[in-house]
Image (tube, rainbow, N blue to C red; front, side):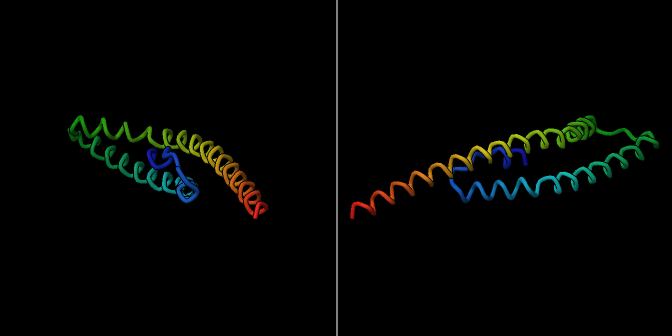
Amino acid sequence: MIQQIGQDPTDERQLIETKDFITKAPAEVERLTEVLKSVNKHYELLEEFSYMYNDKDIEQFWYMKIYPLRIAASLTDGKNMITEKNELFSANLEKEKEKFQKDIALY
């Protein structure tokens, strides 16, 4: 998700796709957070029975707990980037429109 949000759109179509993705991302983060809570409950249950987990599994679990915060920060950056790109594309469109009007006036 973080890579998708941080992708730099090169045209209007990609800008719209990125904007749509960013709009849908909070719901997906919420869904994944619920899955993470469920995994946490399973780990707690296993812990009650003194189950010995693989250290790598625990490391990955705790690493995944920070992802909602990282994605939230990425969303903020992505929204700012979309605003900047939208202004840039609008300015370019305005320049093209003015050039087209000048070209038409010559004929």
